[in-house]
Length: 134
Image (tube, rainbow, N blue to C red; front, side, top):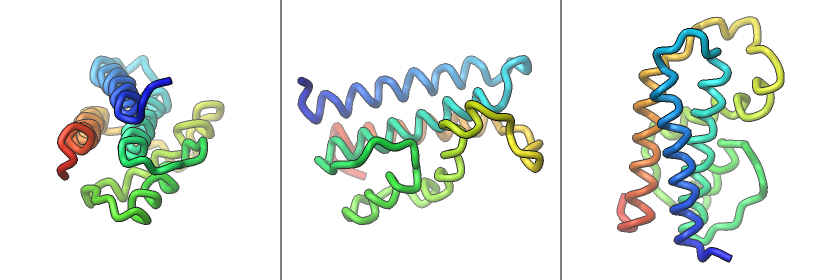
């Protein structure tokens, strides 16, 4: 069994793999937005879970980014203000994974933007997990 620090670093490694996939797919128009969105949601979920694991905070098995963000807040763990908007990606974890994007979601995903956000989230959490600073 891995200790918390090792597990947190493993989650960050997995998040970084998803971020790399987003980066590599961002220019490929054949890849659907919901697929790219799924991997972005995974980056966010794994990064937040890594931070919670590192801080020894228990969480239930969930893909709900809002729930994970609330756990950070409830435990006075600082997070960048832009983390607040990340909960809008929760539906990409399961709902849009097995269904089409809703009618009003025909705006294309800013793939370069979420690629940058993915790496920023990972780097922030990585810093928290390796130095304990925010």
